[in-house]
Length: 128
View (tube, rainbow, N blue to C red):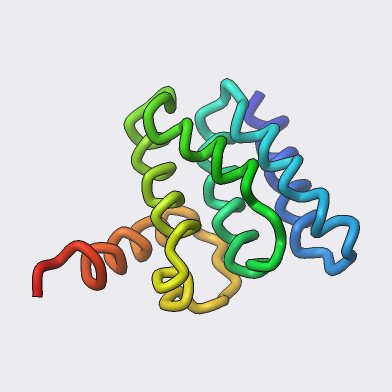
């Protein structure tokens, strides 16, 4: 099962960053499927890749992804999924936060979530 998950995640990752319009437009459907998976790792990876997609392609419609991630905030199987979904929603629905995050080739999901949490705390939650 782990091998299948890794293959799926790699395929989805490569699909988004290949520069064809058709691939770019079809990526959210792949992420949506992964967000509905029973595999926690696949769900967490799909949350991460959904945020990267929104960062690199802000003009694309991510409404369905955002709705599914919003469901995970309350109904995610684990605390990690619920927390990552919460961070993703803050990121995807806040233009100011999206503008703070630089477009880089993020590969480490844990590091990205950590950075995002720190940015949220520093710029939006901390009392100044």
